[in-house]
Length: 448
Image: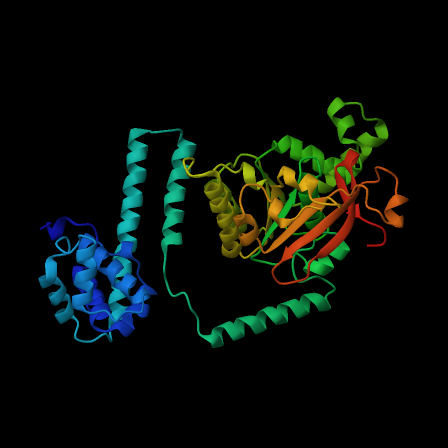
């Protein structure tokens, strides 16, 4: 027997009450599961008993001490949990299931203290041993404490009255925005696209995917530029691929209509220099925040939360998803990407703002039939991106489309299709835009 006084924060009596109620009063199982998980029990025996009860209940079995004992015996765990005698004690300790939620909350509360203590001890150990650079130690600490929030079971449901009230409030806000001539979400600056998407809605993950060289970074920067200059809203742009200097040059070229290659060579003329300076003056007064250092989701999420708290950012753009470093580099690549896309989705929900993640398409998109248009299945490395995203936009440069309008186009007029391949709450479709590559600038096509 372990010395109870030397165990981390726990409440053995509450754990026994919860297990006893679940065993004797099966109708309380859903109530308990809605509050605690297996890891919330401090005692290993209680974890095994809880798991066995859940497994039996999931099979539609009416759980009692005999069936529970048989289940534990089949897995060679009956002696580990104290044998048949201890199961009988659990049965006797909870004659009523009326207080199962109260006892479960006590168990959950102790678990939070225990997990927090463990994270603190691990952080203190890393600091004392100086196991890496200070920045990495900070990342590891943030990751541990962020993970505590993700472990929270909590009350996953709400009364319908609360949900209805929230829905009515959201509808009033949307109608007010419409009456003011705006869109429901953050506008991209492309009229038809904003019409079909109703802007970029809060709490949603928007994936913009394309093959290399199609202009996905330029597209993301154009959206950021429009939001900060014309919507006057703060934006965080996270560049995993390019430096902050490169990002700044590109956005100034797009704003000032200055040839990006001439900027790199230092061969711009006086007129271009003047336009570049005017663009710099416009951008200097905007609230665009560029993060060129974050490489992991832990750093990206922490920085986004900090900017939401300090500056009230209304949009996060990440360039690009597949370059984000995984937290666990030993996992298979598909699982790494799945974890990253899932955390981007959680970030959008937590901050209650849209998150736009740029992504790469695989090579199969270059040979996808007569029109060569990319499809959702071409998202590189993981189908989870398609599942997690609320909206998926695929950028496509048409070639050889056999209709009269396109046959009469100049061979390099910058026509780009924004294919709305998925929209969870709206229509799909295609929006034409123009990519002026020399300026790294996207513009609306025609009378859009």
